Image (cartoon, rainbow, N blue to C red; front, side, top):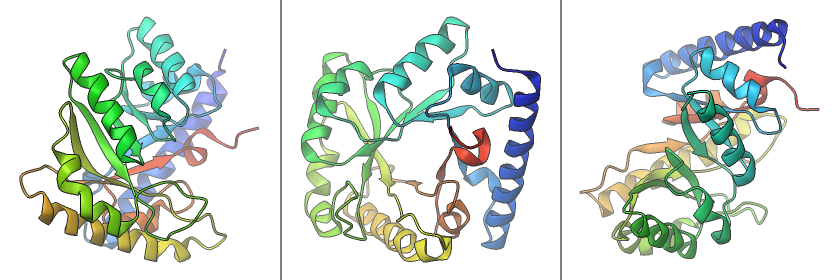
Length: 237
């Protein structure tokens, strides 16, 4: 069981993050309420996710499908139903486990994966909101569509039934200097604007970018959703 002290420490960290978000937003002429804070409790037990929700964090995210489904079930059993986000790599054979359970899937990194989400969603008479993961830096270690590829196929992707493309997700390189992430966030923001022009009838308005180490830089380039783990839940052991 989680101690009151652990929850108090989480509350203090969450307050610090919210204050920092508000300052980062103000610094670039934005309002803090334009930014959705997603608490990522990966590797922490469900009690931590529950505490975050009780502290007012309505959006929670997980990297792994199994951990996501387990926490959804555990919290739902207690009458707690946050907006759940899958932010990690999704394999085609795991799609069936999460259809109808997520508020938003951030990590659609291939046409084949989106087609599987479409098929499973249609079968359940659902519409699944997704983000397309892009790799604007061309890093071999990163998943996602390249800029030229996604511009070429975006119209076709937007027509798949059972899905709604809501925007882009990206991950910047892990670096000791978060200022080095700015080109990735800038290029992703510019790409999103180009794609919106290609699918003008779609509500393509989400930019999921920025984590504990670089969310301030992401906010400066228009991030609407930031994915924060350590800065809220503490270091993972």
